Length: 72
Image (tube, rainbow, N blue to C red):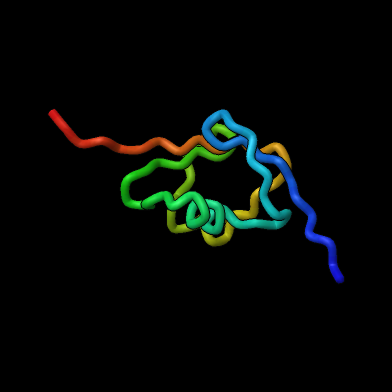
């Protein structure tokens, strides 16, 4: 049986353990983040949402997810 390796990343300032080789899209699904209402920053770089299926997360990555809120 293969042992599942986990890594630690930081999401909005909080540590989170995820399975090694997880993709950014998998994390967003797990966190139930609606893509159309957020901006995503990975290690201080804004991410093109069309590429989230290709981005693998690495140990100590820092992710900031900013929610857009409507109003006036």
